[in-house]
Length: 346
Ligand code: NAD
Ligand code: GLY
Image 1 (tube, protein in one colour):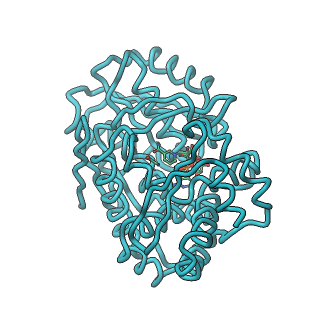
Image 2 (cartoon, rainbow, N blue to C red):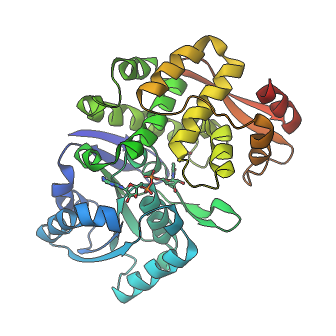
């Protein structure tokens, strides 16, 4: 088993091994004195993996309850959150018990926020089951729900007490969801690790499973390093947003339907690289294509750019964006909105 120690304000381990969810109970028992666990999941992941997780928890001596909500981003809202609070209350969960998030980034984000706020904070474990959740959202402590005004606008920093990554669970993902996660994996190669990028160049979406454990380990280790330096997202953590400024604009233009986050990130990385590091464009695009992701968009920049300045977390009149001048190195740059628009309209 591979282990990564994340040394944030509350430190924790990430465990990575194929088949690990069937032994999750024994590992969770080591991070809590309690023997009462509440599992939160969605209907797809619950149908596939809840029984394995619950039976392992029971074998380790836990009394287990489960809450299941409909899968998808549309569930990451205040009303499902209220349902989770009611369930935790009805289950008699106390502050010393443990909550287990079993699923993708949606389950992890809403469960993490429930754990941050229920009884002013209950420990929680992440068992991420999408590639995006394993390499990105389960580590680093960002939790949130969406409100009418935008995505992830209500949330908290709350680190898990343990993350359990079982890359066997990725084998049941639809190809589009695996590709989505690969956009973030390519991003890690671009911002920090040319060797990772070279490994991705040797494979494609059809055979990437053969090196998945190595990829998950490498990406989490990069995220660990970034988050340890800037846990509360005041500076360096921004490099994780490579491709995301235009990516979020593309998602927004498509009203968050029929266009996934990974597609946005992939196209966003290619578009900014086209403008500011054109010598890398062909190499990046070949890699992006190998994982069945888009390398650009037909939508005119003039239609997309207004969505960049609608980002509620943006500083007033300027935009910070990320450029990779070489593979494996990222720079944070800042420009007035008008200047950024001029660069992108190129
Ligand atoms: P998701 O959680 O909606 O999962 C995608 C789909 O895959 C869902 O239908 C889910 O039921 C299904 N699924 C999950 N695991 C499966 C498996 N093993 N087999 C088959 N189907 C499975 O989406 P996601 O891409 O994992 O996460 C996206 C969310 O993550 C967004 O809400 C985004 O804001 C958030 N996010 C958070 C952070 C963070 O740092 N907290 C970082 C990046 C993204
Ligand atoms: N996914 C970006 C971050 O964790 O900061």
